Image (cartoon, rainbow, N blue to C red; front, top):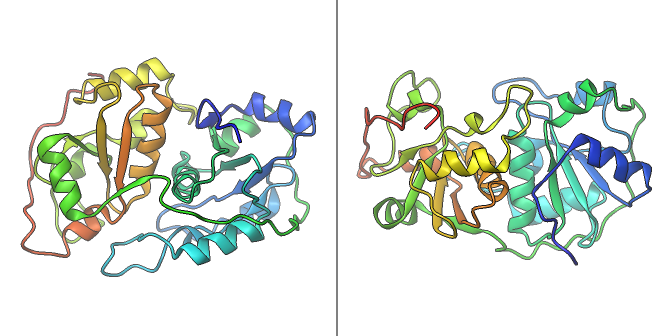
Length: 288
């Protein structure tokens, strides 16, 4: 099995692969925090042959002590991937309708479960539609897949591990910069960030059209935040979604880093009042 050279695939590349008849599995995991299910949007228009995967049911466990979006039960995730037609050997392309956040989480979970041929559609459904590429409203009934989840294919941090990365390596906070500073916190009951973390907002890794920045630009953003080629990098956010988006961006940067995600992230960190909280530390200047 050959791993793709990039975690991203362009709409043009995907259209060509589909036209060539490559046996792809395409997954629509569209989701937005606090919004109703996007299943009706999928039913109205999706990439031809794309199977629907529900974020809340398949890509996250219920909120609780593990945070707002804990790691899903691996058996549940495996079953959802099989129901969507995923085999261990099948090339998988994941997309969504909102900044590739949900798509990146599915990508990371598949990689964590040791699937080696998964990519995210760069720019998602918006980019695909903007190019006038075909969409469908036909019901998709995938044949059952045989995917076997065999974690851990990706490194995971707990709270102690995140603190240790902040102390000895690099720990990136992927939330918006104001939440990192402890300002405008409307989601979690405690504001601030993990002491020693560096602000690196996930959505700043995107261009205006929703595609990720070119690899060289991503590399410059990360090196300005202390990331060096082939180093270890820990990543967290509010609940593990933007952190996985940043892990994808790190892979796409070409820096060759080894990233580890604190899945529970800030929403888990603050469940223990003995854990230190920092606030107000300036983040790197925009564009640095």
